[in-house]
Length: 309
Image (cartoon, helix red, strand yellow):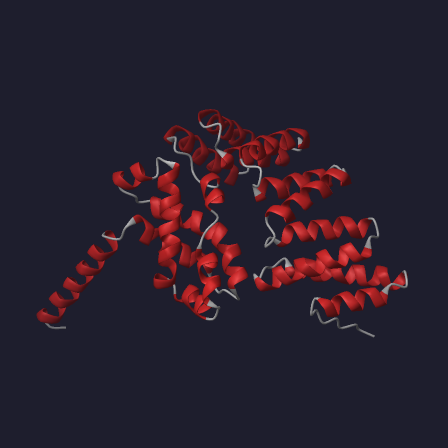
C-alpha cells in the first residue's frame, strides 16, 4: 500500500470518527433504536417494538453522553423531546422502518412513528443521579441472582426518587424471586400508583395473582392490560386463559386467537405457547361437542387449523 493510500485511509477513518462523535443525542437514540427493532412485519409490530426500543435506544445513547446531554435529560420535557425527535428521525436512519412505513397509507405513518409520550415519561431512568446509581448497582446484584442485595439497592433508588417506576418494578421482581408474593403485589401497586397504565406492572400483577390462584384479581389485571395496551398480546392471552379455565369458550377463543395473531406479527417466540394452548382448547372443546364454534372462530380470525389423524 502506498503512503498516499495509507494517508487517505487514515483521513477517512478520522472523518468517520468525527462524524460519529458529532451525532446529536436524538440521532444516536434513533440509531440504537434501529438496532433494537430488528425485522418488522408490519406497522402494528413497529408500534409494539417502538415502546421498548426507543427508551432502550435512549439509554444506549446516553452511555457515552456529554454533559450537555445529561443536562437535557434532567427534565421530563427533555426526555420526551429526545424520544420524539428520535422517532421522527427513524425513517431516515433505519431502512427497515422506512420500508414498513412506505408500504402503508400515509395517515398511518405519523401514528406508527409517534411514541407513547406518557410511557416514555415513566419507563426511563431517573432524573436523580443518586437514584440511578443505586438502580445500576441493584441490576448488577440482580444479574448475580443475589436478590436480597439487589432489593436493598432498588429500595434506595426508590427512596431517592419516589416516581422511579423501574426501581419499583424491580423491587417487586426481587420479592417474587424471594417468594414473598404479597410484598411483590405491594410494590407493583406502588408502581401502578405512579403510572396506572404501566404494562409491566399490570402484567406481572396478573401473573402473581395467578400464582396465588386468585383468579378474580388475575382476570381483573389482564383485562386492564388489554384495555390500556390493545396491541400487547399478553392481555389477550391472559384473559383467554382465564376464560378457558371457566369454560367460557367464546371469550377464550376471541382472546387466544387475537393473542396468537399479535405474537405471530411480532415474530415472538411465545407464539409457540399460544399454539399449544389453542391446541389444548381444541381438544377440550372437541370433548364438549363444541368444535363447530371452534372452527367458526378460527375462520373469523383467519387461522388455519391442521388436525392430525
